[in-house]
Length: 360
Ligand code: PHE
Ligand code: ZN
Ligand code: ZN
Image (cartoon, rainbow, N blue to C red):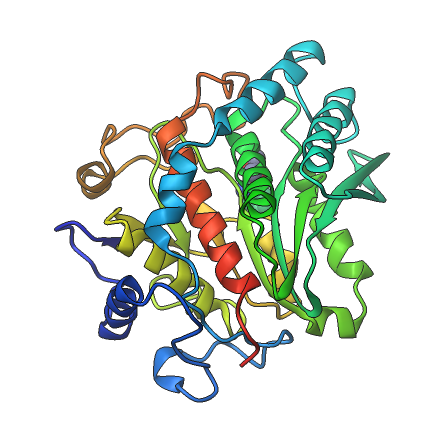
């Protein structure tokens, strides 16, 4: 299931290769197909999706986006979150001062970039006690009829600073938001950047978000892109298996289009990548349950690196992808900065592709 660069490739198919090649030469304009008219591109999911399916789009240049992200100071965000943990009992868990400080950092960054972040508060139970927490949401311009939610969890576990899990996802989402403002792109569709609370307890923040949506708002949510770990020190480049062709658990209809966009980013940049299933558990779960097309990025946690993965991605076979996952050693030393740049570029590319897509 590892793709690209002379590596065994079980997930690839002709349609995907063809679209990646086409995308490499067509660098602007709205192209490719709408799923309704070109069912050949899409393996049907488990049922009717609630969200509108967006026409796939080739408006962004995957190589240019990667280049742009190679120059971005992603690690600065991780250093800031490490300082927050250092000053607050070594963690940034929901309901603690470390979470509040992490939130202020994200809000300041968003405001400085021109966004107006809002807190969405909620309460939940942890070990029998009531805990107050909140999500942070920041919207771009664009039609709310097709909202693209791009998110990652902001909380850490109580045992550690959570710099790879999930400071790295926060950095990717934040930097995508900042980059979009800087490029001056006017999105056709609204992008909602989301920083979830209490993922580490029971996905409480993202569950609350979905519970608060009306049926109409669920229908208007065209896609959800999740990032839960983007800098695993012995990591891999993985994106979710939207159509279930590799892991047997398809996301809602439309999820394959998200998989395809990530596929295209890595293929056009000749970066080996692989798919990962939806069964691990992260904030995509409530979205998948609501029938919203979903996908996202992952660089690995407690699984040990296989030999094929070491060949494709480098790193050490037989060693955990992130041996500090959920531990006190998930610090600023526990990251792969190059991988973080590549995964953040992938997120930005997918975000802008869907932000500029027309409804199919
Ligand atoms: N993937 C989550 C994290 O570490 C934890 C989790 C696992 C949540 C399984 C739900 C189910 O951030
Ligand atoms: Zn975790
Ligand atoms: Zn996580």
